Image (cartoon, rainbow, N blue to C red; front, side, top):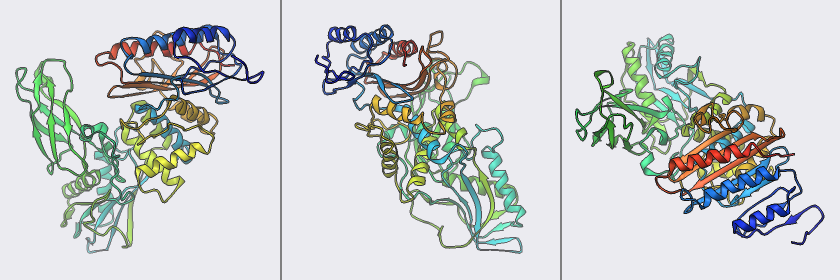
Length: 529
């Protein structure tokens, strides 16, 4: 192959494995990019350790051609973080579902735009007048998009029960003992239907498919408790929900399975729908101590629940509420006027700092948090943004202006739950490399779990060279497994990587995991200087 210049070559690699090996052997000291036939990658004189590179590429090729992935696609991109030079690429420019690795882009962008100390504010306020302990007007909980309000995850911040008590106390301290109007969940910051329209219907009723609201609470989830039957196949009855949701109804066809089979329940529902369907199986009880089994579902209207729970708390505390509970915003038709009237602030609840929210997003892979950060970040960049689609466009333009190649970047949400969204491994490492040059990078780096130690990757690749070295966000949806993040090379260079597996063979989960662990272990043997 004739070089185009003394320092650069354009190499068109044949798809045959034997020819790839020949190319690697011809350029022992060169960084290597292997791509599909339509790609013409730059191959730059570099210092990727060729033996380690050969081993890694052999692992990837064996994975791609083996029974676990031969009918799907394996993609890998490895870059040097400091200058963005791509050192290894395998199917790296094929647009594939990212699953939850997308959360790295969402949280990184949020930190870069908003800063690590950014906090949300949720406001308790009223309109009208207070006279002789009677509020002639409405009480509002006005949301700003905080996904953590009432969460149990953060030390020093109130959970659901505590935040209700705080709000009730603020009302009573203002001398209010009777409310002539309504308690209103004000989610008007977002006037659109905030659930991405590409999310699978089967996910929407489950906790991980909880819809975003401008007024989120308790991470927009509830638990439904089942009483398993006494034998396999027997019906499992619904005992209760926590928190209590008397305004919701359930059609239940859940049955009992063998001991230890775990949660096999699916909840079918939709935003603002108070009728839910419960299907699947729960495990047989082994003793009276585990005679209940709970499953997490998604609140269909978080703003309504916030108002409902506060009214309930107020009435328990001796404050009468004459009007009905209502919610506004999120695409709902207004039942009360939430604009125009002057309001008096009773209490403002501050969220944990964005850095803590980002860490929980990446460590626990919380879709709700990612969707909230996507919308908040986009509005900070462009106040005219009014939808998820518009938010995605704003975030895309943010990275494009920083010089990242976003060909093939077609995401549909901020969390990766959408199965039709996609990006390339090249997109991912390009953004992660650019992120390493942002002032907030050290904080962002700390929000990413450590393989073999923390977060959703704590059990991955233990007792391998990747454990304790690789920081990675995992991703998993139907037929998709992915990891992306950073690692330190054998010569101390910070590197970024993305590995995406799409449409792997059904029933090959363990084999896919084993192959991915081999790839992660192979990464840390590379050199980057």
